[in-house]
Image (cartoon, rainbow over the protein chains, first blue to last red):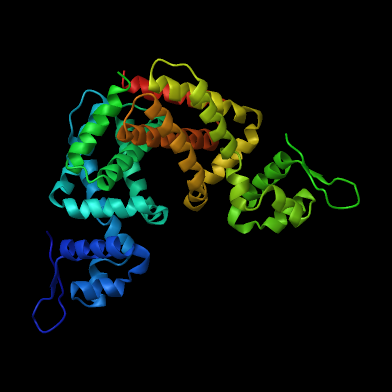
Length: 194
Length: 194
């Protein structure tokens, strides 16, 4: 967990743990409806000032989609360093391995996905982040010898299937971890073509 | 092509061919940017009144996404009546067969997809229509013995891959018909798992 330290004030650092602030915010969104909660209320619930909150989370979108950037960076690393004999295997393993990051913050991930799944608008806030992940997948397919059309089709399919699997996981309170349910979901998907 | 007939006026029916009005509108959107074109300009370009236009196309979204409803109805029919030994085969064949409707109006389909592909906002206008198609696919997977998770993963993957393939087709001015490029794209996708 990273710690946000303010350099302002009289030498006494103000610390706000982004993970904790984020989880509190997600609980508020989930209980009261994300449309009805203001960032002022999030700050008040966390006992921090509005400006300290905005240093960590500049928007509700940043609270909900906050984990995606790190996930995509990890995914890119796995896709570059992973060994696999087929592109399907490479994408499957890399995605599952990158997703293991989320296994340490189950409640946060589950609340994020429930909120994303409950509102097309909130889903839309993540478009830029999803596009980043899609590009990372497309590049991997092309490095593996695929053409542009294959890269686009496979990456779009994988991204959408993953989001569908994860939202299903969140909504059903499935007891597996996100990486386990993705691993099982991808394997089931692949078995259909066998 | 269906004909919109106004019952108003002095017994002389005002006819506006929706296909022609729609194509004119799409050309305007494509040339000038969809944000800059008003529905008044669309009506003027088609030489019809604003109220006649709104009877055929109540919004820009209806112009761009107008063909999707008929496609989804045809897809549902194909999925219900089609014979196949695997669910992948059923989805593949049904989607391609339903898409053949579009082969008669290539310019319209290409312009629609170019415009959808060029703007996340316009893409978002089709969310409800895409959700309908997704449900139709999910029901077919479940009828074929799949559970809810499989249905969601496969349907999301197929829908996104199809949109990616079709937008690629539109943007590259690929000479094949939409149904041909989908058929080839699905086959390529399936070959990756073989």
